[in-house]
Image (spheres, rainbow, N blue to C red):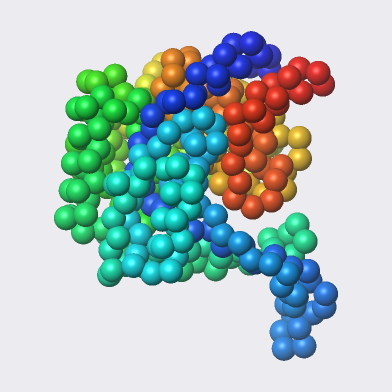
Length: 341
């Protein structure tokens, strides 16, 4: 699918305003240490970074929430933070973005996940993770579950995103309790999965792994090759396995520089070429894809349009440095720019 209908995609994005999305999953704080590498350390063959500034932003499931907001939707947040400085900062940033954090739980026995990145110029040199990956207690998970059920029963949400980074919030029983209720209510459900963490759960509207995740989830070994997606028999095999085991309405597999492969129930592949012009940093691109595609599906777009919109959105964020988002105006502008080239 090399061509696209700019007017159709623009009309779909304009409908994002006011779309109500619940996002449940692993919340993180992304911390960036910026500086310049001026010399090599005499203690070890590593660069010395002269730090110029530091900043933090929402990461993980919280970055999905931030993307939904910047694209025009509203968000109900569900997740767990620790009773620590990072937890307070994350909560404060959620509030700054107008995200409803009534479903946020503070657990004094956990630490808030922090991903700390060291950037020299435009190059990421190092990432340090501080995290607790133990399973969230049943009491906290029940509170979140009941909150989502209330939203569904009150018809207060149009879509639910399950954002799994394997940090202990989500499990299959949680999804199995929510997905049928949401489906019966006409609510879109999407999953950004972590391989090996949740056994197959049926009934999702869409699932969005990247290529590596898809192969790991299907138990298929990847082989290095330069085949176009349309000619990639292994990719077809993986899609058939995932569609058989999970039975989502749609499967979107991110293919990095090759764009996306979209599959429906008959496992027919539609390839959507990448829209990225330059790639500086892929951090958070998957969060942008799941946010944009979910908004599109929840507001009535067909799956091909939803995937194209998400592909454009990802092409914008990978051209920036750091965990960033895309705005509705940027997204619509990118449709016109692509048509002009």
